[in-house]
Length: 77
Image (cartoon, rainbow, N blue to C red):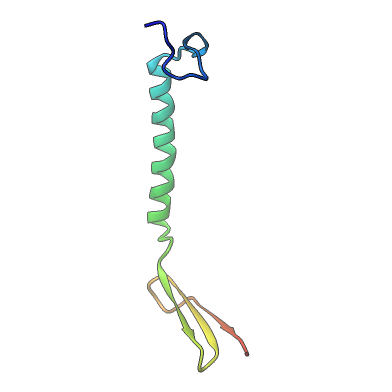
């Protein structure tokens, strides 16, 4: 086949990268992503909830499952 499949890139310009190097890159990237995900699970990131009361004019941010860590913001309109 004498014709290039990708018109703007000729077959002679494509670099050869061994499959083992590419798979090592994907493996290391997977380790970093799994480390990040395990840290978010162990640190309980995203837990808690927010309460917005417009009549009493306050925000409540409950951090985690317990009510020990509460951040209150008062506002006036």
